[in-house]
Image (cartoon, rainbow, N blue to C red; front, side):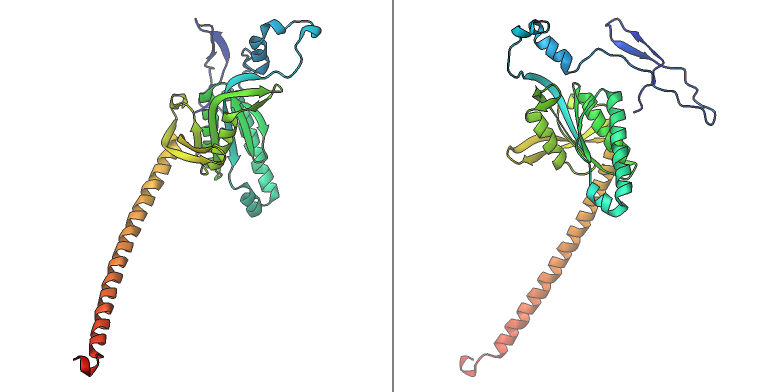
Length: 287
């Protein structure tokens, strides 16, 4: 999926911003600059607006009338954690300079795609990132986008995502079960996959669920109904790999069955030979 390039904007009858398609030359001359995305302006949907809407009587009160103590705002968010798989091994194999370049690309791509999809990079976590969105589909799209992008680079990304209510802490941090769950799902996801606890209806049409699993979370217990999510192209490849693996397992099972049968026959023959040998060595008085 490519981001739509905007040459301008208009408003629909519902008042939503709609981007106009630019007139782009489909066959640009060599060296012709690629069109630049026009700046987009949208209403603030961040923490500041939510605080203002949650406590309108307190927005303009005198300092002496503002209640003391910490305030905690409960918000619904989709939290997404993305992690470069095997980064320590990559550093050991390619050296620190290549590793830093790869980490720089991961952050650059994550930052750029997050901005275009309406997702906020909450914090960088070494070779990973914590991402937050008010829109579950946007967060899932970002996670799948990262998996898709880096698969072409021969690097695998694992992603975990969960939607739920959390407390907005000190204006820019989040505390709550969905935050911890998303982080744990990321840690549990196989390289190149995304584990999610979100509504399947929030998945974009180029992303598919290849099955559900139960994940054991330390301190929480088993979490069932976790979706295994992949971009469609990678899901097709994954399906082919699974079919090949299934065929290999079937062939190996047949070989093991044959070996077991041969071994059984040899053991039976050896047992018969031992019985004959024992009969030949019986004492004369017993005959």
